[in-house]
Image (spheres, each protein chain N blue to C red):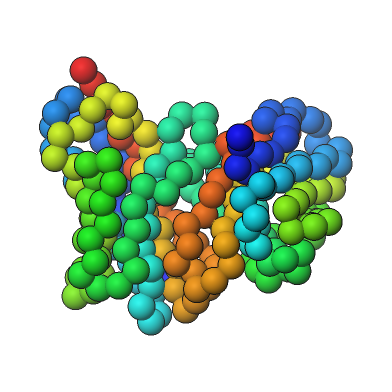
Length: 112
Length: 114
């Protein structure tokens, strides 16, 4: 079945450091790919998405590129802020399904 | 205005009890979901309803019964609660469609079974 694998956390960075969170997937067909963010005590919010190969999703300085050849959708940000501290989830939906399959989440802590 | 609201925010109860969690969305979406997040933050879908009709029912004990009185509401009733049911339960909604639509999540209900 479909699955998402993302790097284990936690990840701790200093402010203004470069961030990469790796995400790879296994899916039938051509999935849509998403990154969601969960701030403490809140529900998940969509951060960015890409629906076809080579698409780049971007939002709030975060980017991820849909790479079909490597089945990856790595999340990057050039300069993180303390306010980016949260749990980040990679997810996919495939086959026109309404069902999202999530990775296990990566907790990011950014220190001042 | 809260888009997806669920109540209660916290629920502490004893084993064997029956409890309900309510969810409402004011986004006009056709599809609603329940997800369970365990202590390690792993999220797994439980149910999905489209316009009051059940479309996804993952392998969930039948002690869990969703009910959708209308497309803006999806409640979750749990019978005979067990310790392993302790988790955060998230309601979500999306416009129905191809699966490209993002989900809008509520803030979660933290259920603790003692």
